Structures are given as structure tokens and as C-alpha cells.
Image 1 (cartoon, rainbow, N blue to C red):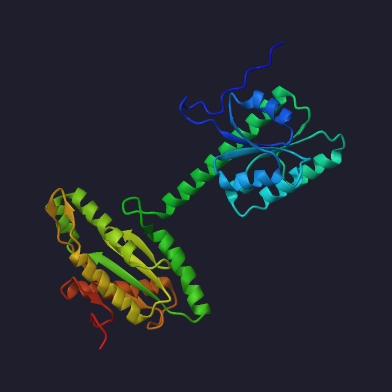
Image 2 (image 1 turned 90 degrees about the vertical axis):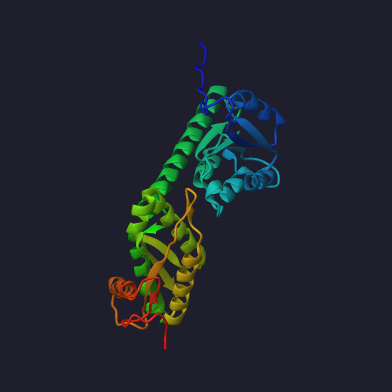
Length: 328
């Protein structure tokens, strides 16, 4: 009875490269047998010993599975397996590894599983068993990778504003609370900016909602460009943005707020060939300068000062409860 056919593990397109498998084996005869059984479905990369295999794994991110012999010169299969499982790179650490050996005793097999092997094959390797085990572990590894990618994408969606690609209010609160705890523990300051686009409804009414969305995207990009790596910009909803400034005192926050206001005023925003003038008002609050117990309170102060900036003529910043745009 003929062996059942192995389905193509990469059936999407004839133009799609075959999955790359690293075969670690010092016997060219064994390599030839493995290649005969797998080359229809996979591309094989050969390494003569564990050291060459380790170099290949670090150099080639396309490798999706490893088949390794145990007994090899320079670096054994067991040693290679340990290196793979201890790698700081998740791409290498999570690779499926199938171990081959001619050893009759169970000790070698137990050691391989203890070191992190996914599966085990006795030599000489049966063709159908080799194909089936490689296929199963490769498909399982791809499924796990796709699930992890989906999980990352979902987490990103849950914390990111879909229009501006900035972080959303939910993540802002979470990170702000963490920073508040850290600032109090290490006696450091922290500031917040609350920013609102002036007369945004007029932009939508005059130029259309498409133009309004483009203005939001442009302002978001400008904000993201002007802050430091430790800072965080979030869209709070509508035309309102918040900027978290760890380790920033009142003066530093005011200086940045004025730089942002001026940069937005200078920005040449053109949508469908029409120039759209954009201005912003900003409220500033700082942890050391206020008597607050929570991020909500700090945001409340920034919001109150944003309202003062709006009432004082817009296109300005407010750094205190008198609506001043600078310190005396």
C-alpha cells in the first residue's frame, strides 16, 4: 500500500518561497536522505555541526524549524539545543527542534526532551515518519506564531486611536498612574498638557469632515515628533489631546507647551488643495506645583487651565489658575 501524500505546508501560492528548515548533520548520506524526503515541501539549509548551525540561526531569520543529530564534532546536538532554548531572541528560542540519534538507550532521548526538544527520531529515519513529524511541528509553530501576532495586533487595537495612531485615553490613564507612583517613590516631578484644537467644529463645517480628520492626523504627527521617547501623547477624544511628561517640572512643561502652540500655528496644513489654518489652546499642570492625589485631579487642573486659555482668546497656553501664559 502506498504512503499517503503529504499536503503542501505552504499552499497559498506557487510563487511563495518554501519554508526553510535547518538540518544539522555531519553525515552527508543522512543529509541526502532527509533532502530526498523533504525537498518537495521545504527548502533545506545544511550545517555540518552545532557551531555552524548556531551561526546560521543567528544570521538567517527565515529558518522555521531545526532537525539536528546528537553526536557531532565541536558542538553536539544537545549543546545546540540548550543554546537555542536559552537564546535572548524569541525568534530562535521558540523554534521547533526535532532531534535524531542512533542511540538505543533512553538516556539520550530523555536528555533531549529535558533540554527542550519538541520531538525525537531514531536513525535510520523512516521517510513517512520524518515527513509527518516535520509537517506537524512546522504547522504547529506557524499557528502559534500567527496566534501571537494576532494577540499583539488586538492589544495594539485596544490601546491605539484608529485615526491618529496615537495611544488612547485608556492607555494614557494606565501609564500616567504608573508614572505617578514612580515619581512619588523617587521624588521626581511630572507634568501634563491638555491640548484642544480651536474652532474645530468650524473646520468640519467649512472644509468637511474628511478635512477635519486630516487636521487631527497632522496635529497628532506634530505632537508625536516634538516629544521625547519617555513622553506619551494620546488622543483623548474629539479634537482633544493629552501629553504626559515624566520627570518634567512646571517650567519645562510650559516651554514645551508654547513650542507646540507655535509649531501648530506655523504648520502648513493643506487638504484637497486648500490651506486650513489651525490653532490650539493648552492647559498645563505639574505634580510638584499642585496638591493632588491622583491623575484625575492632575488632569482636572490641566482641563481647567485649558478652559481659561480658551476664554482668554484661544491660541495660547495657560500655566496657572489666573490663565497666565508665562511665569512672572
